[in-house]
Length: 112
Image 1 (cartoon, rainbow, N blue to C red):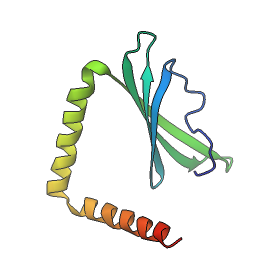
Image 2: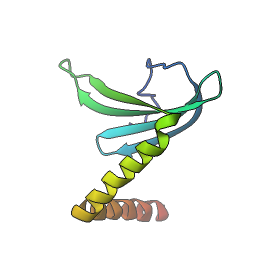
Image 3: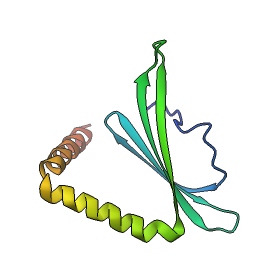
């Protein structure tokens, strides 16, 4: 996925790009895009892209997108934080493996 291709191509949603963050997570890539309306209101699109092999053997990207509007930012952030906190308490090993992977990546890049 490091080929520079925009896996969201063709999904124009009309807003002006303000900020983008790409998070690669195993077989999935998440795109967090802050966009501005004509009135300079912000909204957020979150796109999940998963690469799989199509029937013809060529890569296919399955995409799911949600739109989050300014009036929902705080409630969404609170709900996400609560859900993540629940998982941290009940399945802390999920976060330990992530921390170990991150530490391994940082060590690899430090040695270059």
